[in-house]
Length: 370
Image (tube, rainbow, N blue to C red; front, side, top):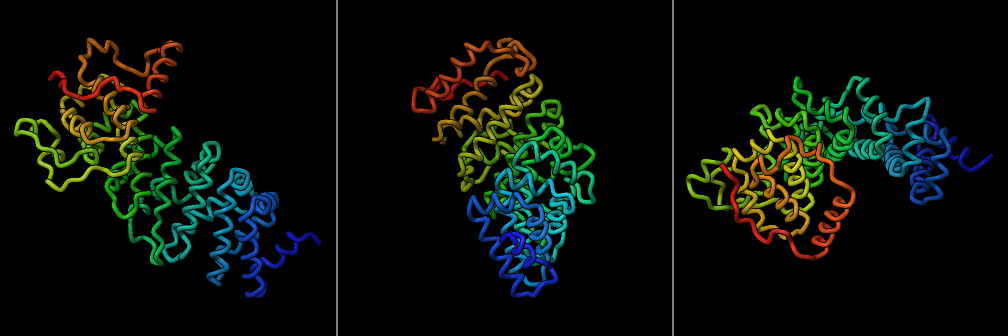
């Protein structure tokens, strides 16, 4: 009898609690090595046995089972093996765990679902499974937005990167921005969530991804969503503007307090700036941004910013906004064909700047035309 087959026998749900607990701990320890991961991933019977213990009455046995699944799902071969199981739907099982308000290991379930959906080709299968099930993407967002949802202490922060993974798919973005639902609007309330930087970053990354759907730009910038001030607020500081300047800004950006702090994480600031850049793709978006006078916030942010990538993104946005539409000459920037030699030249210039070379614009002083 091979050792894995023997281990599987000890993992039987009806087995003695002490033996079952020891076997589950052994399985979890095996996933701590590449060899152990590879071995368990190649054995569907072992994977099903581990899944069968995630609701074991012995709390440490269930926890070890979930720990093993976290490690197995973290590598693509293991994730594929879990999703290919015929008699156990790993996506359905994790959704049940997340949905169960009394399940103590729901954070592990969120982590497993986040791991499984990292790879784009696997993510589509998971989104399809969820869309066909009783708890769809909207249902997951509703759970995420209830900060006290789980009654056993699970925070469910890792459910946010699951939503971000879905937003890498066109179908996922469309579901998130369904105008008949309220998914996107619920997500943006967590853009300034202080309890978890990971949740905040994932929500902003989801919004960033959605901004690549240019046909949704009018809706995103409308009063129904009003995304522009929400993207700008984390970039704003305790800036002083005169009355005329303040009144030209969206209401949420006017007369900010003296203790207003800018987003401290440069990766989050980069996502915010990239989202704003996407909103500049269409002429309608650029004109809206000019009317909201976002130049003022970007100018002050540029003075404060030290990250070279963020500075470059800031300057790219301003360079578009200070030019007239006649100078730009196209309605849709994404339709402009850039010859390969010029694209390579621009990329080289960007790389030189990011490596410490000179900037094309050392300061922002020229205001856009009103």
